[in-house]
Length: 228
Image 1 (cartoon, rainbow, N blue to C red):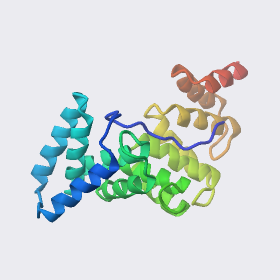
Image 2: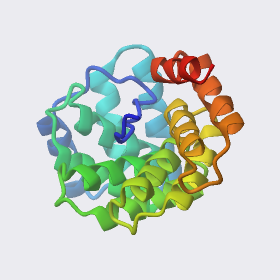
Image 3: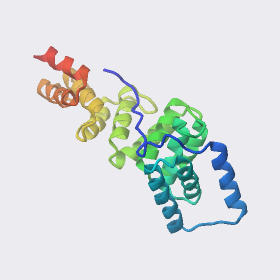
Image 4: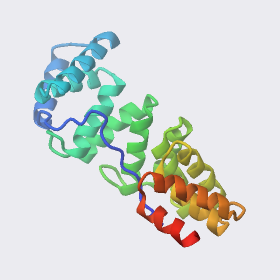
């Protein structure tokens, strides 16, 4: 059973964003000019940025994402965080990624909360802090975010940032597994096969291995063969 945190992919696949230096200068100029846009204006900037991304006009999109993020637009804050985290057109900067994910996470953006949890778990851009990681995974998991539910369950399974509790691991793996998360499905299958945190049930183990196998998970396929 492979135990690793799930890193989500960027929703918009931005690959060529203006440099971090360009973004910083533009934000500074906006501040000195006394521009304090309202939420509606920030949302328009973000929507324009999304359109520019679809047209592969990445540098122009980055300018608008940055302006909208600074103005408080939650989706723009998340997108800007991803740009910094992945170094997609901007110089990779995990500290800046954590900053913008944090801004979006405070506004209950589940994907940003999961990313922030990952950064705290791995100590990227922030001081490693398992308690903070579990806090942010938990917030996203409570919103129904499947990847965060898997990460939350994994923390309980291995006792990372929280007291080890296989029953809680089963609970959160099930939440994610029911949404089609393959890693959660195979982990749930393993726990059922072992009777760890749940009553041993080979039929349930077979069921969840089967669900993961249907998605092409090789380890799940192997487990199914071993059970036949």
